[in-house]
Length: 322
Ligand SMILES: O=c1[nH]cnc2c1ncn2[C@@H]1O[C@H](CO)[C@@H](O)[C@H]1O
Image 1 (cartoon, rainbow, N blue to C red):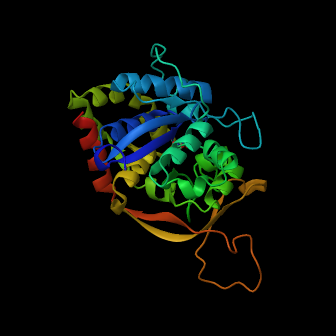
Image 2 (image 1 turned 90 degrees about the horizontal axis):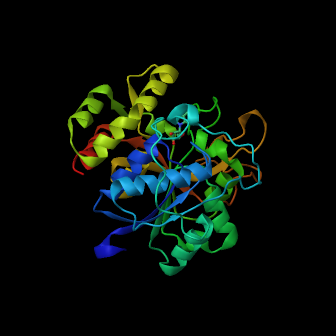
């Protein structure tokens, strides 16, 4: 535990509008101590993710928190990446073209920072992974004992028993680096996977947005500037008057896991064909007659239900009281 019994958290992030919201919620949550941000591609390219992470910490007045830049390429060194700027704007933050940050990332890669921190604080670090899992997979490559030394990895990723958001098979973060996701899910670490089967139930409505707009808090004022693009995307792509709180729900799962329920099983990720990025869960109840690609792999926890009103309320409270 960190400062006065707080959970030490590293957020691996690709900001991203819902990442911005999640980071602000985390920074304003007394249960946790954010000890670093690591960056990754996904909503934007990694270089821009680093710039946005530094910018968000400046907005929050938390330049004391280090930012370690992550991988520019996937685990298999692919450079052709799928970037979701159509969800978040070309700058990742609602096309606001904020001035560049003054700060700089630390002189250490995201993977090295993750490895260093779990070695400094074995069993005490929670990694909240909000983008593709490349950095976490690289940390495992660098230190094969990483899965045993990390406290928990809370992952926004996967579409369990439902359609994906990239295509019917796959969710965006897993699609971003399926090989990394498969390595992480089968690594033996204590993993909590929060898929879009749960985050799609957690909707910040137009009425909620109005409440945020009425607040004078620093975080609300900032977020109301950038949320327009995210709302427009959801209206167009999903015909809903609201936005899904993917990343904030994942931070809430790290703060208060009892707001979700979980089941345990083995998750493998499809790495080829038309279902590349599919997360396939084995509940391990059936004794198959032969060995399968799931046999003997470690189990992880996958979120099944979520108390959506409580999550939205907690997110709003943490943003309004900032
Ligand atoms: O329709 C989409 N396509 C691609 N990425 C998306 C979409 N909707 C949300 N996200 C982004 O991907 C993560 C959840 O899968 C979230 O970080 C969200 O910002």
